[in-house]
Length: 298
Image 1 (cartoon, rainbow, N blue to C red):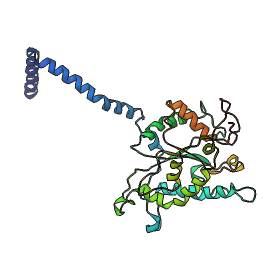
Image 2: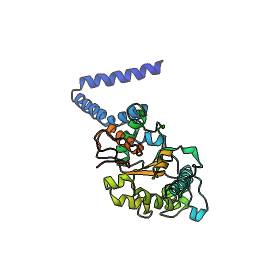
Image 3: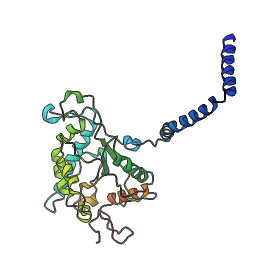
Image 4: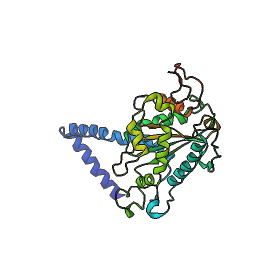
């Protein structure tokens, strides 16, 4: 008790000194103002974390990890979760593309339904301005799926993300450029990126919108040493019967970047829903239809 009284008396003396010393008071006020200003970013980050709205949190929720990614060319196998997803995409898209060839080709049912019949796959980064721009659109789309934005196939929202800058515990076992887990994954699936690029350059979106060809080049022929793979990259994977009937099954659509030309998250979400509804035969409001659809009218 004596110690507590002594401590209390000490602070009382300090307070009296502050009150009696005029020049100290303005300094304390200015210091308090600067303390509040500098703490605003931390407060904002804390508030967002409470609400689950920190940048990257949405994409992290759907992350498929590259941890443990090996280079098949040298190690003979690879077992990361992202690698398993890519294996499924490659195997089932190959089947789909064979079926997309016409009446003489037969599309076999996908042999791995773990990821669903229709879903988005995103290549994103943790320090990526385009990803931060894109993320609110995907969050808006998911949160208002079937409420505002209506999938014509009535399917559920499904999304998987691969972070191109994710570290893996075995990175140190490789020399550059293979000391990046995503680079090893790219090298494992060069045929997948080659094949899907060829198909994606025949889609209605590519024909109607004339997107930047260089993005397709670095997607289909990944420059591993130069690191020019575009992030974010959005794929739509569609194995549904409607896509099969239109010869558009498998990896069906691609977008690059954060949809920067669309400022509102609602506009981004609507655009992404058009991408999802790429086999829709109906026009979309403006009379020109869906640019992702075979039935787009110029």
